[in-house]
Image (cartoon, rainbow, N blue to C red; front, side):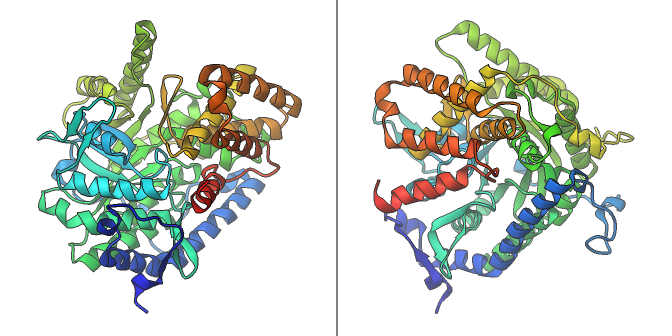
Length: 536
């Protein structure tokens, strides 16, 4: 049986553009990627679970690698190696805008004036089958310069300008399945599907345009996971006859285990690596998730956990030090604020926060930064142009500075308040409701939220309940108050939908469960897929 015939589909509805995306050749390409790496991928997920068990028992297992543990070569002791030479259109990464692979968003982001745009299949996209396939179609059109959008409400037409941002794509994390596509009876990794379909259709077109297939890699926890991507990249290039090292990848350092292995992650991807990114919102979630069994590592109110906290400042400084030692770009974190059009005073205050955050990043040594809204591009550009000469700050290496294990594991300071408990419930439930309706990028209380916010919200509550900072009675009272406020804000009719009821139940179950659920998006995706299967 041919490999593409081994890919089975479950409730994978056809759309007018499906045949263009899911061609026989594209499916064969994806099937070969899956066949070649599925066993290693499964082992890596098992290793994650074993690593978490070790962390639960002994926090000191979170440490920097030592020589001789994996092989004879120890990259930390070799000062000579660098990552590959950077392609011209990835040399200036001052401002990067991110957003889901939604058609209008892609056009606006590419036209925003940012240097780069990260098109997202992960935290800001709800992975309905239609969203995933439509996203691939949108990127095919974007790469070819033909993408257009006519807004049915306003009649406004959107199209690409002559000069656009450099395109990067973020596939789903290794833990997320694509349940519509089966290989040997099992759902394939969503990451393999997202990467494979995009690469097959667009790699050569991008090369012909003088660019290349560039990616962001999320949720990596170890250098072995970086090795998996190295294998995928090499095989993909080989299958399409593309020169080795054409792909470029920036790794999001958004898990606590990964921060201890940044040198090794860069080395595993040495021929492909472009940089590392401070995925700080998911990093906060990972800190709480990884250390959830330790009562002395409870996160205080989320708005108290800023980049001035020692564990986060140490993480950012170590990332810059590691990147610049190896000639890689150190990209700063997301500014989630969005312009507030109906309140000039509140808008001015929000934009001041963006200015301060980007000023801090450029002074610290970052080579670029992230924003979530086109309206923030000029602010980020202004701060980086004031604080940085040239395309990068590779000369800022923090030589002589040592970031130790205890720096990265230090408990953040701050209080735990009823107001934040209620806020976490409100944000988590409303984000989940939007996600279950097919929207993964949601404006809430003047911030652009993605799955990371919901993850932080429910994990904080789980910590507080599990370690006695908040009791069950207090949680029930806070939930009652949060639901009343939501009903006032969005209306009783919306609160009566099955998606809202599912969101309440799912948030409650994962926030108050006996064992901490690894990722909120896993049970949420199961529910989403069930509704797709049943038409509910």
